[in-house]
Length: 360
Image (cartoon, rainbow, N blue to C red):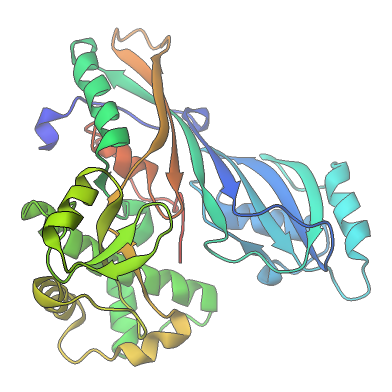
């Protein structure tokens, strides 16, 4: 319960929340797309994309990126740009890498290279986080260390964070009203996908909440679609006893729905649960076929593990006398640092800004 977790404060400054995107692949050095690696401070991903694209004379609408990153943070990521007609991609990459571009306040470009395809959401391996948690009661340090150890060994519920649902927290509602024809939807395809992803996330989180309440978010049930931790392969749980042992060992996890026209549904009791919850949110008779243009749907593990977890006490010059902890860890794509930390700390006032990591 939240009351049992020690208090903590995030993001008192952008430097308290440092994120490094881990690419799924490195640029080949050949191709027509220019990959630009940069660090931004206290700016949204979309702000940075527009600023860099315009500084290089590119259309921001043609830019690609693997994931959105939090605004109040120092974040390093890569975007891809499409050179204007008649502009040599190599010349554009050299210009980007040389630095000194106008209008890049809070943005530092590190390098640029060529590749054969545009970056798309999910084209990343994960994210490396270095996060300072302030205001931690000193008498709670033992509990904090035990909680962080559990994050690495047992995993935590893989919920979508508040960032997924927009600044006002109403993106899922807006998506549903639009898709039902009750409100006029956005014309921008990127915004359409953003709203749809919020509605998908709302269904997933509701299923996850039900599994957490039932004590089965990490326990395979007959008919579950299970995901292997290393390869990501999916298979139906037919031997509960064997799969329970593998789940305890951290080899696999039950999955929940990222709804879509082509999503694979589980069987048995998990299917009944997911159908009931989806209908309660979407309404009976909601046609998933109409959403195919927004995404096919997929499965997401109900549990996530942080890797390379370590922490240290650091000096806090606030004068309040509380402890200050710097936490280091790596998460796979699609997982939220704030969700992981909220399993250890009570984090009041952690609002919604922009996704730390998108996987669809």
